[in-house]
Amino acid sequence: MDSEKIINPPSGYVAFFFFLLSAIAAIVLFSTDNLILALILTVIDLVFILPGLAIVNPNESKVLTLFGDYVGTVKQGGFFWVNPFTAKRKISLRAFNLNGQQLKVNDKVGNPIEIAAVIVWQIKDTAKAAFAVENYLQYVNIQSEAAVRHLANSFPYDNNEDETADITLRGGTEQVSLFLEKELNERLDRAGIEVLEARISHLAYSPEIAHTMLQRQQASAIISARRLIVEGAVGMVEMALAKLSEKKIVELDEERKAAMVSNLLVVLCGDRSVNPVVNTGTLYH
Image (cartoon, rainbow, N blue to C red):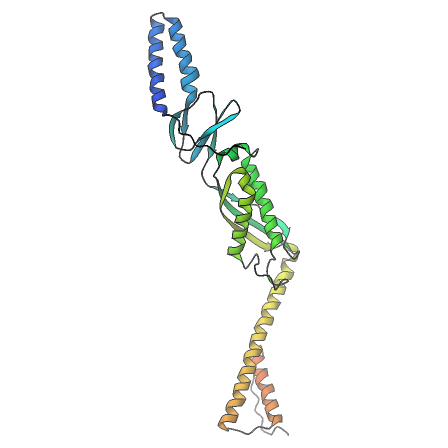
């Protein structure tokens, strides 16, 4: 496969000026009955000058081929004259935005998820885009879908089932985006395409397990909160006993300490407000 070759053809304004001169001369010759010379000038205008004129808009290119051979690519915007027998194919150099469709795939641990990505890409090698693949737009769509599926299979959705995972689809946004961008660049390099940015635009559990996973996340959050509350309550009880003993406010035997610890833990760890109870007796009656 030929690599891209940039060419700078001559200005089209000069060729157009010659076209006007020859057209005027042909009209004069027709009026003076010099038909042969007039026909020659007309053929030159219609066969050699006009077909060679080409306009290249900003951020566009013209890929030129002559009888099946790649001649080169015009990337500079302007008005040019090229070989009139060359075939001219316009290829845009602007950035394209691909909003991928939602795909239903399994993550690394087998959970069905829905995922979609937004990809920004542009053509960097017009020769590859024109000749290496049949249709570079379709090629981008298919390879992007394959890359997103591979991404979903490479990482777990979160740490619920794989606590040792360093990167997850939900938590490792930057790392996942870099992985997807690298994957796409490797796949699309064959078509001369460069990926400028790739990010996940949609990520969720599939509907059939979404409710169950939500309950699991809520349960995990409750357990984590309870664990933190218990650790704090134990520390507060320990501090209370130490302060009472240090200041000698009251002397507590082991049984009274146990009762006090039990009451404090109930107050500190309970999920409802506590109603005080006044004990008019003793601990033993």
